[in-house]
Image 1 (cartoon, rainbow, N blue to C red):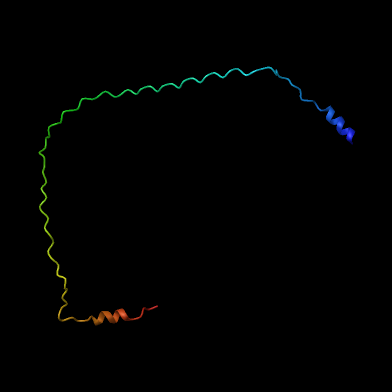
Image 2 (spheres, rainbow, N blue to C red):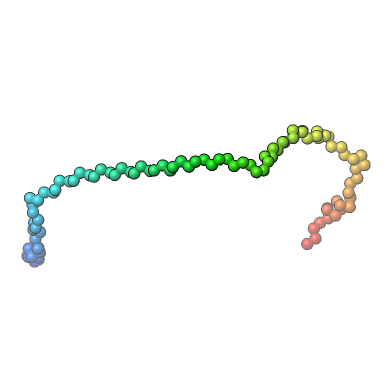
Length: 98
């Protein structure tokens, strides 16, 4: 078994140097400078249009001075002849039909 493995490994192709061992890498070229951005051209100033004369009269709104609301009475007076609505409460208190 050992001889078979040895024969097998010996029969495998060996790694050989197939390149020039004295070759050197060329020197790295310096980086190119970044291009400067082009300056943006400013738009030409446009002449301001003359203010057109108003064809309509200018309307001036005058707000009248604010008036306070009338004072509210704090006490609510109940009518002297208070009558309970018995007919409504009889209807309201009856059970719900099912």
